[in-house]
Length: 446
Image (tube, rainbow, N blue to C red; front, top):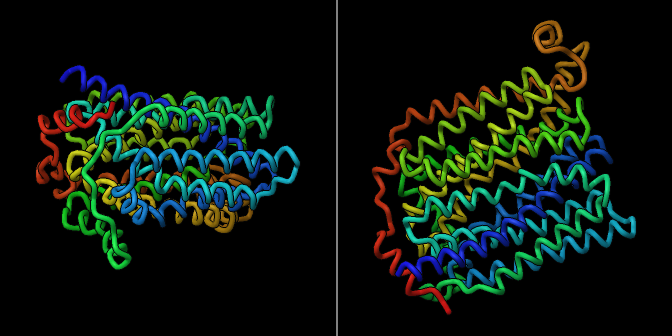
């Protein structure tokens, strides 16, 4: 049994490595395209629209994708999605080489990739739960969060590569990482799962909202998802504002270095989830992480320098990895595997639905409200202007400080809700350790 368990972990590690490289390539492209659009347009709103198009399609499609993933071969779903994303990057590379790339092309490309992501993410997440014996769930979840550690090197490499191989080279690198992820999936086989009967057209809608029904009946899980939605909204606002604010006092290459150094926090957060999560209540990891995020965000808004920005990014990324890892581990333990595709997809829809809203609101608030308020002759210049200064960029600083305070307040408020803090006690684990190991060991394909 030990040999078979090691074989199961081996399959997971091969798949994880391929996806890790793919995330690295996507991180490179995302960073470079964002810088390119902001430099071309000088508009925070245009910059924010890229992130909106990158998130909105997948959020809308997650419920339907979860229904399909629970019925399709998850390995083939991931293969098709990686292929589609890679081909999309080839089209963008062609437009760059022929000097026809426009901002609207980038909107279309990220939207298409978002559609593929709507199926890829629940397939990858549910497949990982099947591959991992229960005793390795924490370790595997931490490793998957480490996939976000593409941010460790992506911004640094992106800033350097933008000056050397330029935009076309970065996009080709992204395509190569997609190809590597494709090959790793070709080389392995996933465990078989019991087939679920095909859907009739009438049942599609009912199945699509099954995830909502499942979560709604479990108040603790619903509270967790709603808390993640509020945290994602606030983090989304900061995500849009951080780059324009940083570019006001540093260069893209330096910004890449700052992101890379600060992003070591993802590694720290992933290690916490892998080892520390078994000793504490996971929900405490979610809430405490967000408190630290809010404090770091306020700090960089109040005193924006290279040092404070690096510290804030480190703390925020560490908290992000811890928050996501702990929340996903709660869901893995409390949601039956046969419905995880649907439940994970709908929980992702609920928690991420606020992100496009944040991207749209952030640009409007910064350009139309807070920047005018903190201008030399702005309404707040005689008051808050004396504290943090007036002029271009000061409105963004004020907005970031407000978001930091709200993040701390919401986290402390959520800590007072007993149905959330006791979710791990109220809901039983849905996978028995012995059954999970035997199921995984027996189902590994040759």
